[in-house]
Length: 125
Image 1 (cartoon, rainbow, N blue to C red):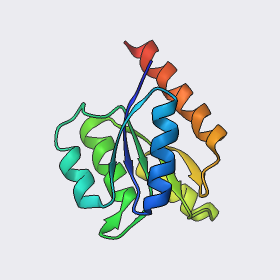
Image 2 (image 1 turned 180 degrees about the horizontal axis):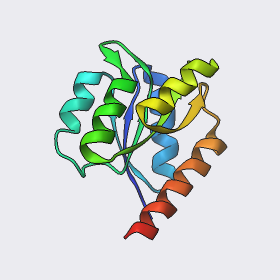
Image 3 (image 1 turned 135 degrees about the vertical axis):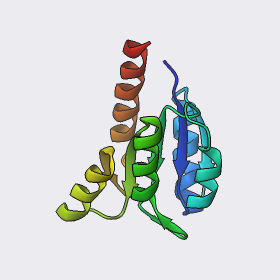
């Protein structure tokens, strides 16, 4: 089952590659480069099935966005980040991210997580 995904990533090349892969795998994706843009795109609950989000953004933290969407909309998320120390991974999980992938993001690992989320969505419907 295809997912509607919001990617929040301020590095243009990373955003482009992830967007191409996700689209190739049959999912729909919107891209935001800032926390503010992401908040505008997620103003209404139910818009996205999944958040793929960098932690370090130019105008705030992706963890902050994950906490907001998780509590307000029940959105699930995967952190795509360069922050990989155990305390940083724990903080991302504490913010509500279900999974954590280090950049550069391994394509196969991302595909497996998206497949799992799509199966989860199909089972829920």
